[in-house]
Length: 280
Ligand SMILES: [Fe+2]
Ligand SMILES: [Fe+2]
Image (tube, rainbow, N blue to C red; front, side, top):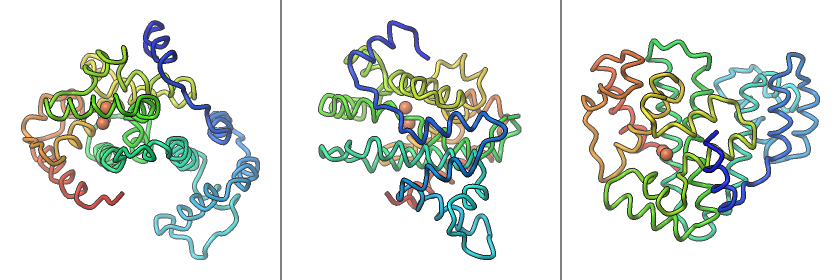
């Protein structure tokens, strides 16, 4: 959580949406050993869109079920509490901020960047020799949601924030510095305040708050470091950017993970291929 003065600036400038009830409920259950799937399923059953999403994932090829499952409680059991939490969290956040694109903002580029960051963070966990408490799909969620603060800024100050993004793009600089100048806080801090108020899991809060550094923090936090690297590479393969794999060797995540040069080349290649394939 950023320091109190920053939190105050964020809260006086933007409205933090209320946490969707189902996310709040699942966050509590996630920490309980005897979490009742039936209880969760009963709540999900009131939400047709979320139920459909859960059924779609449980019936996907990944779970290899012999027969299709149509019962929410069974589908939830197959997915397990953590995956269920991720599915519900992602869907709820998309829904919370769906109005952002109504004002004409081309949200697709931001989603594409977020999905690619999630995919690269997931891939990195399977390649690195870091000891992480989280699995690849957790890292996917951390990557997917790392720029949550941009949605907070867009929904509160759309025109001003679009201008900030334009300025950052044309000057080829990190937008965080311009945000701090304009709003008194950056998208990483706005996102961190939301993540803290919503009591999202700590690794997710850390990835949101520290994916642009500071470097000393990334050296001590492997999850945030991986998301920072994934974000950096995802930005580096966007049109108009050119990322040299060898330039990554000094990134804190590469140092922590001990990734060899060929892995860095593969990472950038992977990012280029996936960037072309992601449809939003
Ligand atoms: Fe960011
Ligand atoms: Fe990003």
